[in-house]
Length: 133
Image 1: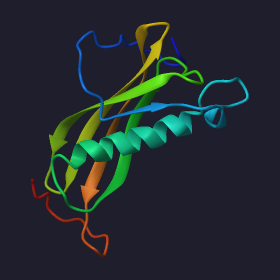
Image 2 (image 1 turned 180 degrees about the horizontal axis):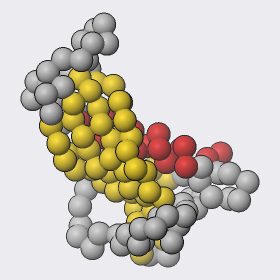
Image 3 (image 1 turned 90 degrees about the vertical axis):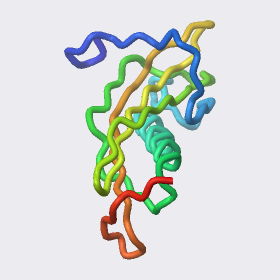
Image 4 (image 1 turned 60 degrees about the horizontal axis):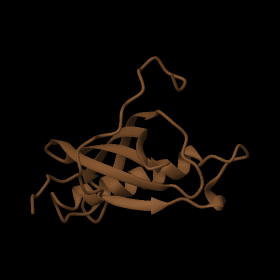
Protein backbone atom coordinates (compact mmCIF):
# COMPACT_ATOMS: atom_id res chain seq x y z
CA UNK A 1 0.00 0.00 0.00
CA UNK A 2 1.16 3.52 -0.76
CA UNK A 3 0.84 5.14 2.64
CA UNK A 4 -2.88 4.53 3.08
CA UNK A 5 -5.23 1.69 3.92
CA UNK A 6 -6.85 1.44 0.50
CA UNK A 7 -5.91 -1.34 -1.91
CA UNK A 8 -3.94 -0.30 -4.96
CA UNK A 9 -6.19 0.71 -7.81
CA UNK A 10 -5.78 -1.07 -11.12
CA UNK A 11 -5.48 0.85 -14.38
CA UNK A 12 -8.52 0.73 -16.60
CA UNK A 13 -8.47 -1.96 -19.26
CA UNK A 14 -10.94 -0.02 -21.40
CA UNK A 15 -9.64 2.25 -24.14
CA UNK A 16 -10.64 5.84 -23.41
CA UNK A 17 -9.54 9.33 -24.32
CA UNK A 18 -7.68 11.35 -21.68
CA UNK A 19 -8.66 14.93 -20.87
CA UNK A 20 -4.92 15.69 -21.06
CA UNK A 21 -1.69 13.75 -21.53
CA UNK A 22 1.78 14.98 -20.57
CA UNK A 23 5.34 13.72 -20.47
CA UNK A 24 7.00 14.70 -17.22
CA UNK A 25 10.55 16.02 -17.25
CA UNK A 26 13.53 16.10 -14.88
CA UNK A 27 12.53 19.60 -13.70
CA UNK A 28 9.38 18.01 -12.20
CA UNK A 29 11.24 15.58 -9.92
CA UNK A 30 12.00 15.44 -6.23
CA UNK A 31 15.34 14.31 -4.79
CA UNK A 32 14.27 10.66 -5.17
CA UNK A 33 13.87 10.99 -8.94
CA UNK A 34 10.09 10.70 -8.92
CA UNK A 35 7.62 13.40 -9.88
CA UNK A 36 6.51 15.87 -7.20
CA UNK A 37 2.96 15.28 -6.00
CA UNK A 38 2.25 18.99 -6.49
CA UNK A 39 3.06 18.70 -10.19
CA UNK A 40 0.53 15.89 -10.50
CA UNK A 41 -2.00 17.97 -8.54
CA UNK A 42 -1.64 20.91 -10.93
CA UNK A 43 -2.37 18.63 -13.89
CA UNK A 44 -5.34 17.12 -12.03
CA UNK A 45 -6.69 20.67 -11.67
CA UNK A 46 -6.20 21.34 -15.39
CA UNK A 47 -7.83 18.05 -16.41
CA UNK A 48 -10.79 18.73 -14.12
CA UNK A 49 -11.20 22.22 -15.59
CA UNK A 50 -11.15 20.72 -19.09
CA UNK A 51 -13.97 18.37 -18.09
CA UNK A 52 -16.01 21.23 -16.61
CA UNK A 53 -15.58 23.20 -19.85
CA UNK A 54 -17.64 20.46 -21.51
CA UNK A 55 -20.47 21.21 -19.06
CA UNK A 56 -20.39 25.02 -18.95
CA UNK A 57 -18.49 27.89 -20.52
CA UNK A 58 -18.77 29.99 -17.36
CA UNK A 59 -15.87 31.29 -15.30
CA UNK A 60 -14.89 28.61 -12.75
CA UNK A 61 -12.64 28.39 -9.73
CA UNK A 62 -11.32 25.35 -7.90
CA UNK A 63 -12.91 25.11 -4.47
CA UNK A 64 -11.81 21.66 -3.26
CA UNK A 65 -9.62 18.73 -4.11
CA UNK A 66 -10.88 15.84 -2.04
CA UNK A 67 -9.02 12.69 -1.12
CA UNK A 68 -6.07 12.65 -3.45
CA UNK A 69 -4.69 9.12 -3.41
CA UNK A 70 -1.20 8.43 -4.74
CA UNK A 71 -1.08 4.74 -5.68
CA UNK A 72 2.34 4.62 -7.37
CA UNK A 73 5.15 7.04 -8.21
CA UNK A 74 5.53 8.66 -11.62
CA UNK A 75 8.97 8.45 -13.18
CA UNK A 76 10.74 10.96 -15.41
CA UNK A 77 9.87 10.57 -19.09
CA UNK A 78 6.66 8.64 -18.57
CA UNK A 79 3.57 9.60 -20.55
CA UNK A 80 0.93 10.41 -17.95
CA UNK A 81 -2.76 10.46 -18.88
CA UNK A 82 -5.50 12.22 -16.91
CA UNK A 83 -8.97 10.71 -17.37
CA UNK A 84 -12.02 12.58 -16.14
CA UNK A 85 -15.63 11.88 -15.32
CA UNK A 86 -18.14 14.51 -14.20
CA UNK A 87 -19.70 12.94 -11.10
CA UNK A 88 -21.98 15.72 -9.87
CA UNK A 89 -23.51 18.92 -11.17
CA UNK A 90 -24.89 21.00 -8.31
CA UNK A 91 -26.53 24.40 -8.19
CA UNK A 92 -23.25 26.36 -8.42
CA UNK A 93 -20.64 23.60 -8.58
CA UNK A 94 -19.38 20.75 -10.72
CA UNK A 95 -17.45 17.80 -9.28
CA UNK A 96 -15.07 15.74 -11.41
CA UNK A 97 -13.29 12.47 -10.65
CA UNK A 98 -9.80 12.30 -12.15
CA UNK A 99 -7.89 9.05 -12.68
CA UNK A 100 -4.20 9.39 -13.48
CA UNK A 101 -2.38 6.61 -15.32
CA UNK A 102 1.19 6.25 -16.47
CA UNK A 103 2.54 4.13 -19.26
CA UNK A 104 5.36 2.02 -17.82
CA UNK A 105 7.15 -0.76 -19.70
CA UNK A 106 4.21 -1.05 -22.09
CA UNK A 107 1.64 -1.35 -19.28
CA UNK A 108 -0.85 1.16 -17.91
CA UNK A 109 -0.30 1.85 -14.21
CA UNK A 110 -2.84 3.65 -12.01
CA UNK A 111 -0.78 6.28 -10.20
CA UNK A 112 -3.18 8.81 -8.70
CA UNK A 113 -6.87 9.64 -8.35
CA UNK A 114 -8.79 12.56 -6.91
CA UNK A 115 -12.16 14.25 -6.78
CA UNK A 116 -12.12 17.95 -7.55
CA UNK A 117 -14.92 20.49 -7.19
CA UNK A 118 -15.21 23.69 -9.18
CA UNK A 119 -17.60 26.57 -8.55
CA UNK A 120 -19.08 28.83 -11.23
CA UNK A 121 -18.48 32.48 -10.35
CA UNK A 122 -19.32 35.90 -11.72
CA UNK A 123 -16.78 38.64 -12.48
CA UNK A 124 -16.68 39.53 -8.77
CA UNK A 125 -15.92 35.96 -7.72
CA UNK A 126 -19.41 35.35 -6.30
CA UNK A 127 -20.98 31.91 -6.88
CA UNK A 128 -23.58 31.74 -9.63
CA UNK A 129 -25.81 28.91 -10.86
CA UNK A 130 -24.33 26.47 -13.36
CA UNK A 131 -25.50 27.24 -16.89
CA UNK A 132 -25.03 24.13 -19.02
CA UNK A 133 -23.61 24.39 -22.53
